Length: 332
Image (cartoon, rainbow, N blue to C red; front, side, top):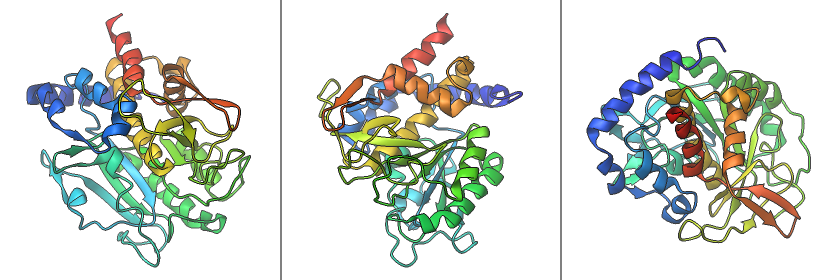
């Protein structure tokens, strides 16, 4: 990986100084995009604890791969501190830069809200990030036949990640099938390439209460699969695993649908990555690539949740605990 993190680390330290000058009190003034979910996952606590040390997304771009987007929405027209929220666009289906909804598309206009919104007094997890909006298929409820266009979307990300600062990919589609094991498709080579580039890619497990399998592409190799627990009103509330789940799940997140749980985790991955970069945390002890190391940190710091229906035990996102682990290493 060479000089990974050195240049970005210097940039992040400069951005942190700007964030400090803006005042940590501003963190407490915003409303979470999803209040119960964010409190359950201790995201609000993370904002309050580390508002003077982290920028929560500044300098990073999240690629949203879905069925298109209404870019005229005020959330995506927003400019924060002189920086447009939408940094790049692409339609991998038609091969042009206009990712508008076509056919039966509807979902991609809102999938970035939990991770990225910074508008109207509401914040997503990594509220200072930018997004790259990419249309990868016609409808979020896709099928294996959509693999070629999704592969083109992922290849575009690999080709343009340095130019646009893409560090995380929200691969939003679900095929609504109960896959107990990975399914080989055209996206596999592209996912492997992104993993080698240390780019996080995750996808929602699905929303059908399956207990023996999950949707594709979440089930694919080199894509993290994200499940859900029912949101509780406060941290420390009950954790009840629901929606699609199986041994293929990597992490569960409080949400009302796994598309939201994955969106939340994508924002959390950006925040954890920033913490690793600004501290120089030795992530190599946790995984062969940075995404694998970050998932290990999330799993090791999150509480265990047992699902009676499947008999499986999962780990649940606790962003504050993950940041505590990494940022405390800077004090040693």
